[in-house]
Image (tube, rainbow, N blue to C red; front, side):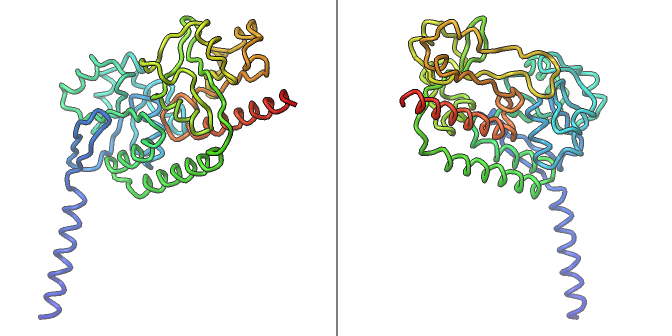
Length: 304
């Protein structure tokens, strides 16, 4: 009888494990909607470059079957089938890939096309982490959806450790007034709620337009001159592009009275590292932190 009971218990455990493996998965996406899958996704189409990077970070790279243009990191992502770009998706190709999960960008993808995919009953997860501290949870959530929770947790913990190391290193640095230029015509920047502002704060910088209401406000040259930033940053095209940089800060040199110009604190950062809300943004943060240390050193030299 004990043998029979042990056998029955083992069978029950095995059955429970099988049921658990196929239990429905429910998570909240970044729109606040609940996304439910009958089983971990095995065929994922990523409709944003940052989502591709998050999926690979979550250990789900081998489950990604399609991506959009500029999904160029890691190297394996370059070899995946393309299904359009952020603004124009190839719906027929997406359907041909038979995805069991779409990871989309809330404000980057065409909402009309996303709605068309939703009408076809394809599971959609909206990805739009807004702050640096949201990224580890974003990785873990995608790991839950794709059945790779252990890999995702390890990646998330590594991100948290890197973030905390940077925070501790730069928490007591002297503040530096920073202007971040998004575009030149019209002149655009970022407010204090944008993830890039998180990076600026992490490095001990102060975004001079943090209090603007729009996420990406238009500003005047006169307003920038009045703020007197000590350092200026812009995103250059990433290392994965062979094109010339879209934006530079050289035009500001005609105003030598600006502290950033006077001290030559005009910095460009690889856009792949600073503009994508993915794991590599901490590489961009490291670059910005080091540049702000250069600005601090130049401040001291000028004062002597």
